[in-house]
Amino acid sequence: MQAHRVRVTIPEDHKVTIDVPAEVPTGDAEVIVLSSASVGPPQPADTTFAARFRPNPALGPIIFHEDPTLPVSEEDWPSDLRP
Image 1 (cartoon, rainbow, N blue to C red):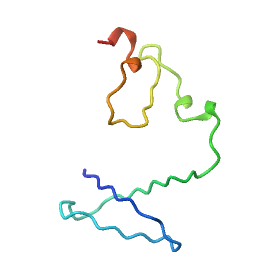
Image 2 (cartoon, one colour):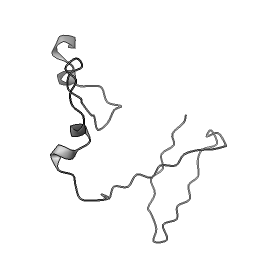
Image 3 (spheres, rainbow, N blue to C red):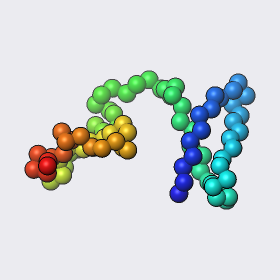
Image 4 (cartoon, one colour):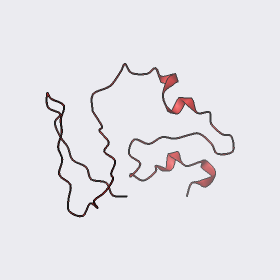
């Protein structure tokens, strides 16, 4: 799967047209729209996505990263697995 990111401004008519590079194969594709505007009121801390999961004693706490492409900080590793 390939990803192609394009920043656009949504016009008043809410219609957006994009051009993709020639390397993107033809055929079915999925388009995802990410908006910086919040869709609803912020959720209280106890109902956030991470708070919905209970930690597993065997695996340790659940950690969510804003940018999963960055290296994981040493503090996020369980103490017995730290270098």
